[in-house]
Image (cartoon, one colour):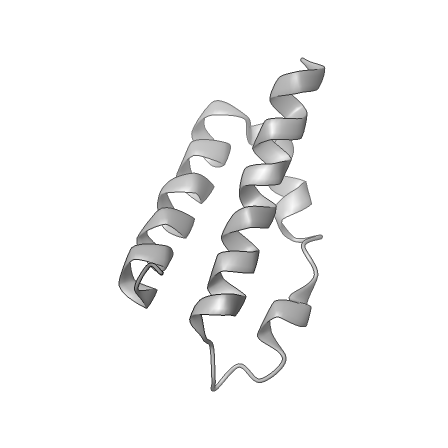
Length: 66
């Protein structure tokens, strides 16, 4: 499993990619459910991985449709 640092880096890079290459998708980032982070003090790898997967799903869905 990826470390929290790796997951955070991938989340940051994916978010930057969305902002730079597909700015029209930025509005969907805010719609990703916050249920991944129930207790903000205890963010774990599973929550980060879920968030990263959601970002990647937004990109994949958009790529398939356009």
